[in-house]
Length: 251
Image (cartoon, rainbow, N blue to C red; front, side, top):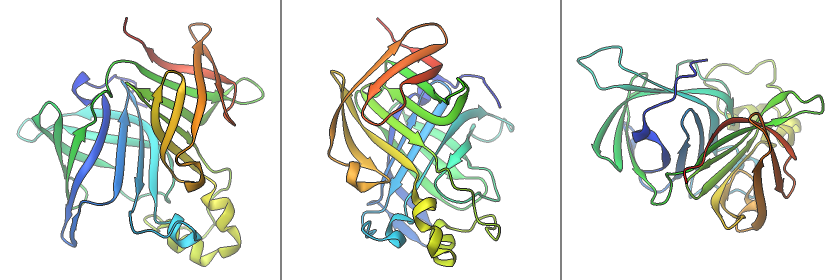
């Protein structure tokens, strides 16, 4: 894992306002990418998905992990690579990487390296300043893949599924295809939480989540750093003990 912090210009929460592919344009899917100094979380909810059904829930996308910025070719824009350690969708056959060009400090254009697409990202106001990344601890005190990320006034919780992928899952399968082949496993495969919202005055108001029943809830949520390595979280249904991966809280 590349543990080099990324440049400040990437910090914050970025809302995708446009996707262009050879198949068409998308300006309606709800897409937010939260970026700390190293860690990212991403959630994508199609506006027209029927999220009362397994098929509709499976259309969502989301992932988390670390981010790397490189410039392997001086003649090309720098490359952002989202190194996914957890993913709502099945594994990909190619890295998630794009060329990045900032046309303003608050807007960046991403173009595909391993696919043909263009995405426009705009930074949300109030999303820079404090940066926190925490990993939940298991009963033995070891970090798990569950993450809590804060950037500015926004908080994202990511808790991966416990289920493993069925043996016949192939790279670039969609979750919808896997669920269709294995309907008896749908509940376990969809049991993956990504929830995003505003965190203000120790209240977290969830705006979007992979489980739509979470949306609209305002939850008391406090984060306390108790040592260089450890933090305590008091938030409904979240683990209590966490390992500090990153904690930047400016005065």
